[in-house]
Length: 260
Image (cartoon, helix red, strand yellow):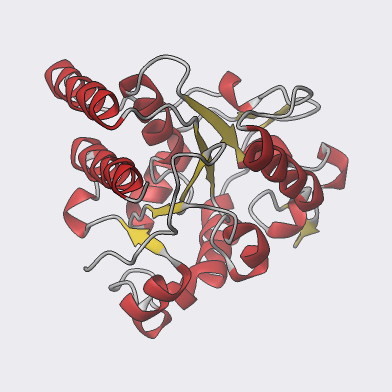
């Protein structure tokens, strides 16, 4: 699939704002943390959409189950305010303390040699292009949905991960639970089939040919909204996914220097 053109980024900008989205358990947080690890210390920081949930008692209930996977469960004004702060100041709001970093992620499976090679590549690239702009990564399951179009427009680079229903279900059901604002949440039986996957289909079918989230992405739609889609061969391989993401970031860094 061809890559749409990302927004023009100038080295003088206060931040490069990167959105990483996709279905639950597609590797968003894992990828974000790997990128942070590969870039020089302090250059990359992460904001998690999960840090903008409403309080536990405010999460909407559908069919007798709390729905943590819908846009109504999020504090969108607070999220937009935080992103505007980052765009203006190049750092997270001082009042924002991440609870998401208390949640574990699965083993990434990327070998040390690959990580070291990417670190060397990125270090050389940053030195060559004299890049010092902070990179803010926001990871979240709804960042590119139509209901969040105003927020979607704020990102300079939009990376969309994908995974199959079977993989998402297996990974989600293997998780122990999630730290919330007021406690801890564990998915009840059948939660993926009743809540998680139907919501994903509803919010992201517009990105796919014929509305089928297991099919190819619609190149025209992705190009129009500036979404970069993970190659199909990277599904199930965080090594390939990481290489793809670093290549896109490298392209932005190189083009930024040439545009000065």
